[in-house]
Structure formats: structure tokens, C-alpha cells
Length: 163
Image (cartoon, rainbow, N blue to C red; front, side, top):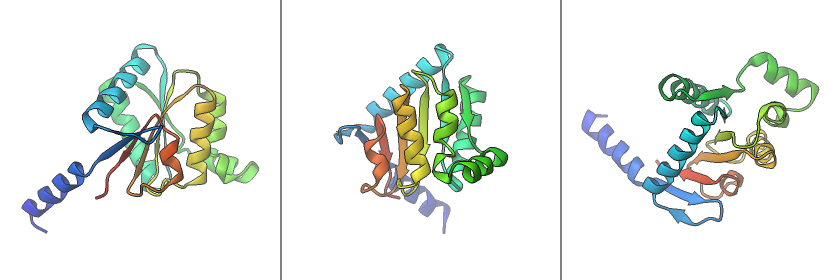
């Protein structure tokens, strides 16, 4: 694929971005990103923590995003990608709890959770979101492609891109 085609594909992907509020109302992407930015600034200035979760490639994106956010934005971040923790929780409790359980121990009111899931239906990501919300966390979901997923109704803002 040529450079020009790659640029056009990226443009098409970005212009297809849709953002929805928790109530399901579509929001302008600029407004949603501004709200997310303001929340991130609040997290940094209040010395709160931004937690990021996902499985597989989404876990890698969460880890990379957390590193950039910490390094460039001076935001305290946490990801749950430690294999010992994941396998201990999965074995001793259940795999569905690998995000919910550490969030239960650590998240405090005003912290932010960013949940990344291509399908939007991963039970462990959903459980993590529900735990974060029950403890006063601000949840942003990035379920990628499919609008008919369980994750879309959980976050304050949901970012969908059909690319």
C-alpha cells in the first residue's frame, strides 16, 4: 500500500470517530476530547491516578499509553500487566477479576480508569469498569469498532472508530 493510501485510510478512520456519552447521546469529538483532557488535568493536579486496562494488544496499548501519559503529562498511572499478579488472580480467584480486584484495593474517588477493548465484551474489562464506578472512579471506554457492545454503556465517554 502506498504512503498516500495509508494517509487516506488514516483520515477516513479519524473522520469516522464517534463519541457517545453514558446516556448514549452522540457528542462532538472535539468536545469529548476536551472533557477527557480536563479530567486528566484534574487527575494530575489532584495527585490522583489514571488506571488503564485491556487484554492482549489492548493491554499493550494501555501500557504504552500509561508510559506516555506519565512521561509527557506527569500523570500518575497504573496498568495491571504484571504476569505474576494476573496469573495469581486468575488462578486463585478467577480471570474475570484480574482488573476488578486490584482496582478494589487501589482506586479512590476521583481516579480515572481508561478501559480499552476491541470487542467491548471482555468480562474482565467490564468487571474492572463496574468496580471503578462503584468506588467513585471516572471511566472512559475505548471499545474500538462495534457499537453493540457491553462496554459502551459503562463509561462517561465512549470513543468508537469504525476503521
